[in-house]
Length: 328
Image 1 (tube, rainbow, N blue to C red):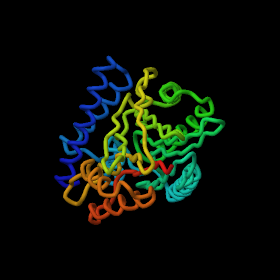
Image 2 (tube, rainbow, N blue to C red; image 1 turned 90 degrees about the horizontal axis):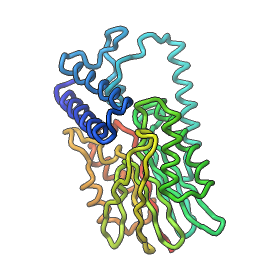
Image 3 (spheres, one colour; image 1 turned 180 degrees about the vertical axis):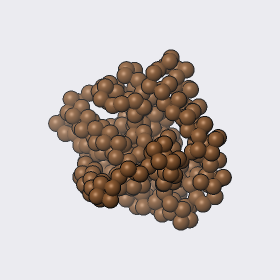
């Protein structure tokens, strides 16, 4: 790992440490968060002593792409035989097919709304959560859900599937949006090992144009109205960090032609060859120019702009985006 990569890694670990300290200060001495903080400190110590990336079993270097996906990783695949590696590859391919089958239709039209999503894993499977659910029975609405599970790879994809099943079940209960996310947090917290958690944004778009947004620590959705993009900020902690706690709901009204743009941090945190992030400012500028375009066209423009920005540099994180537009 070259010096610039080590510098970025150290910054990433210090940022993660700062966020954990903030969460601990608000929650008291939360055991799960303290344990995760120790893991971050251990990784920083390995960086400072030149041992970062060494497998604790065999002493060989862990592949850099694996470290980018999980900077706390301390093991490689040193003890797997060729037959075991082949079996692992087959399992990954099957997991990827199952995960793609969990996704909603890429284009959906219901109750005066049109939605389009793009789901781009960085590897065989993804820790991003993406779903669109329609509601009838006199309460026509579209639920749009987008999230990002902590960690990478198969473990994160399993938690993504858990979120999918959890919200599909809870939506049948017709709970108010804040209670829906609060209940999901309670159940999710009971069934995962620390330090797993998920950022999440849950949207209910009604047939009358009223939109409710509950943001559990996720990237702020952007409301596109009158050619302007405005943030809808977070209203609660990510699900899975604390077992209880209320989640507030932001409400807004979208007129025909207005949209809501949802995305995971794999978009705004993507880096070009110089190490610069794509960033929210560039995204907002793009949305200002093309806010009136249909969801599929707007999503495609965003991805083309990202590809141009990357200049050939690989994406290192899962990326999902969704556009929900009021048509009538």
